[in-house]
Amino acid sequence: MVLSVSPEGTTLWDQFSYSGAPESFAWVLPTKGIVEVGLSSDALFQTLEGLTQVSISSPIINCPPPPSCGIDSPSSADSGGTGGGGPPVQVIAQETVGPFETVQLSSNDPDALYDWLQTHNYFVPQDLEPVIADYVAEGFNFLALKLVPGQGVDAMRPVRVTTPGAGATLPLRMVAGGTGPVTPITLWMLGEGRYEPVNFPSFQIDQSSLLWNWDESRSNYAELKQIGYNATSGRGWLIEAGEPVSTYSIEYTLTDLVNYDQEESGYTGDPAKGVTPIDELMADLGKLYGGISPDQAWISRMTGELTREALDDDLDLGASPDQSFVPRYFEAQVSIGTPPACPSFPPCSPWEGGGTGSDLDAPAADDIWGARGGCSMGTGSGSSIVLGGLALAAALAFSRRRRRS
Image 1: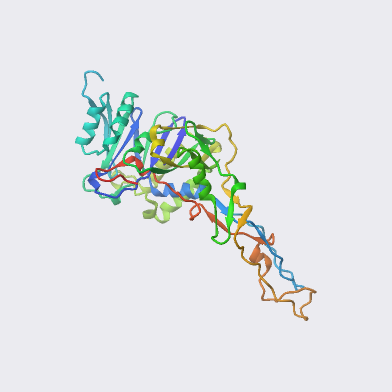
Image 2: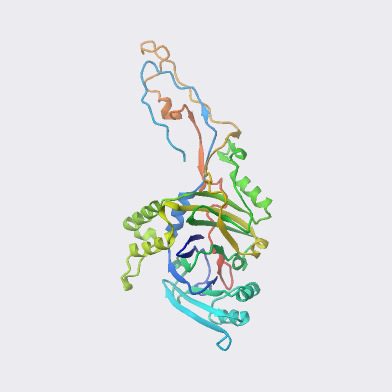
């Protein structure tokens, strides 16, 4: 999921992952007022993933440089790391958005609302009836979405929903329907400053707890995540990133993709309406940035592995009291296992002018170990060390037979 909050409004992006009959897919979201629905792309999520991924490197191995043999080796720069009388259910808005039929509903009768959804083929798990009743009692409207008849599952795209006002809340209670014992979620939050959960616990990984296993070429980052989740009884959110973000970097990456690989970008446009792929992208970015001041834009990344019991409350987010950066580049200070051996070099030949020279064919120390005379191994958050990775927000979509995951 992606959430952008600004004085102009709040926009939620949801990325679907569903397998099953197209006619059985439905997605229902509690809303306030009338909302605006638009299409997005998987590429947006991939771009935000790339901007916020965590990287862990091994401890530095300090090895002696090769003998110079009287020949100056080239220097290299140190490189960076890695209503009362009306009908019981009122249709307040209805439109087709890309491959989806969407309808916005208002009702004071939760039973009538649930029956309306079922009758119109918006299939919602029965265990969500009391949840829907709670939202109705709290004055929420509902956005319901399903595939247009004839559209296949492969036509599905992420959607965005824009609500007036700056309200940072995720309706987690609706996620519970049809889920298993644990629901993994990754949330990116854009706003002016760093955000964090208000009514759920959160934690960060302490670099001093990181351990590098040379034999397995990985760290214990995944295990530390799980310890944090367990310590919070499956309610905790790991704050993995919190930093200023250049809106240009997001726009440049996606614009380049649309211009040179439009199909891969996922932005198709709507030729019948004169909307080009670039137009569609710019509309998406317009909602992402909203009224956020470019020089105050921050991106926060949070991951959770929420138990079913944890999905008994919606997630409220607010500005963090601590507006410092959240580090995501780590170097493990402690290791186990056998580190790779330092390279050996032949001695200098007598005719090579230096006292402790090396063979001309021998690689320079900087080429192997870097300018600091050391090396390290590293992995990013996309590798096996970060279990959970990119958790899709598919848990909000429902199926008659199968819950999408």
